[in-house]
Image (cartoon, rainbow, N blue to C red; front, side, top):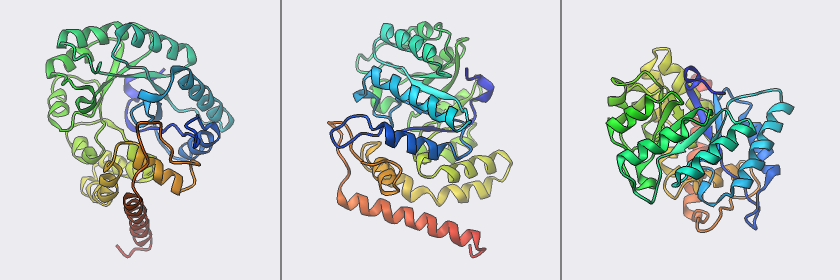
Length: 306
């Protein structure tokens, strides 16, 4: 199981590959995950926002978890496997978290309950019950998708729970993480790709970053340089990624990301489950050009011309 001390570095929320008829494409998942395992990432997340969790059945999540475990075993590389178990129903969330533990997950990513717009007391109770399942919980704050903001006092109270090992902050700013740095020693990780370097400077212990699916080594460099005190070089490395990061969120995540993964041959199709749709041809062209630009700049740096 994932420990608080290990919740640091780059974690990659994986996409869920689908065939053209919107069925799970496990062959693509195997090829794609094997590629990610070639990098020094600290863990992967199945069934997060990037994995299209609203349209993936729980039985399918189990299939992906088992396939991921088999891929890791075959390659003799075991990294933490985090499963998104959060729903807007506390009982269902508790049960799914228990099941994820039985599957052998290392932690659960539990989103603030959405749609129902519960009170702060209701949100805290939701996490209190889930934190008692025995599987380490990472709280996930993302108000743009849940429709409710976690207050600072509620966030601090949740992080005080024994079964909660940290938080993913996708609040859209740096206020929460900056304040929590003075209230808790538990790790808070960046969930806003465009703010990654800023949040590292505010005390983030790492990031859960969709963009790290295609910029894996670049994000590892940004993090490692920042951690070693090379803040200016870390900032320059991050700034070079900004144009592509912006484009990756120009349409609903993970639509732009799936196009790039398909373009690179890591998954067979950019199919998303309805109501999400693939990106426009214009955005596809922009994504491909931004990817080429980053690679060209990287080659210049390697050759000492930057």
